[in-house]
Image (cartoon, rainbow, N blue to C red; front, side, top):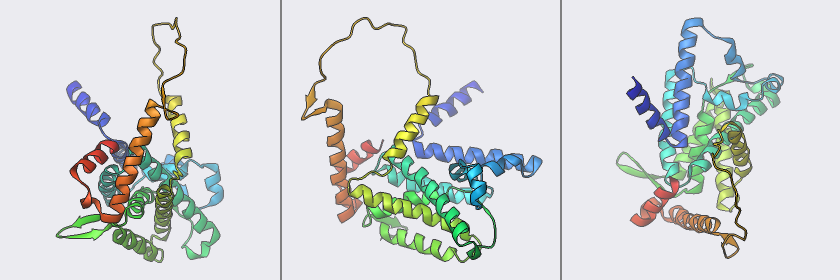
Length: 291
């Protein structure tokens, strides 16, 4: 049993950030499913789902994020996690994990906000009060981000290839049609995630990372819960002098700057000519940078 626990722990540590999100979603699904089978609907769910009523939301604002980890239907979580797995793999061949996490969580937040806005501005369009659950808006944000950033990248579908922008347009069109169906609130949230993904990609192509503020906030929060290792040694001597700089940057900053510029050049090439136009060296470089 100990060996099995160690093996599971080791595999979980080797997962990237988006794969860990899949693991968390699946874990929450099984826990909630078991509890619902034993005791029926339990009160804690009311504090995790995103309510359509704005005043109820003000009492529990954290639901703008927690709703995206709840799934009650097996096929709901199955399709969401399959989408997240395949879109995540594609995303991480081009971008780093932190960017993916930014797009994912901001997509969930954007989807939740549009859902709230729709229900409270035009309530007559919807069938009545409801609650939002599921990671669909967050996954939509990742998908539409890639489609907007590299629209002419080819994706193989069975025996033929299709451009990413074709997929993006088809997905958004389906969500718009879904506004007139039974899951109008869910499809409105999907569109909120899609808008975030598109806007993020457009701004990033201009050199503006609109998720940097969110990233810093999350880093600050995670640092509060991370354990700080105390060194048994005391500092008795402090070297003076400036760090060696190159063109006004430290060596680390200069290296990161060059890497990002190379990534931007490769991504621009993908946008114009497709992923298959890259050389093996360029593909390997993108893969390493994504890691």
